Length: 69
Image (tube, rainbow, N blue to C red; front, side):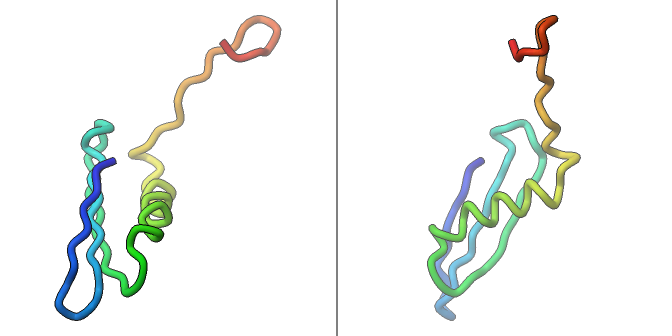
C-alpha cells in the first residue's frame, strides 16, 4: 500500500491510499482532524474489511497430517 498525507487549509489532513502496488485496483481517500499518521492503519484496515473481494485470502497448502506447508 502506498499512502500520501495532504495538509489542508482548514486544519484537516487528507489521507490518500493506493493499493496498486499489491495488484489491487483500489484507491481510498479520507480527511480527518487529528493525528493522520496514527489513523492510517485504521483506515487501511477499514478499506480491506469493506472490500474483501479485492483482497482474497491466500491459499494455504497443508500436508497429509493437516500441518501447513
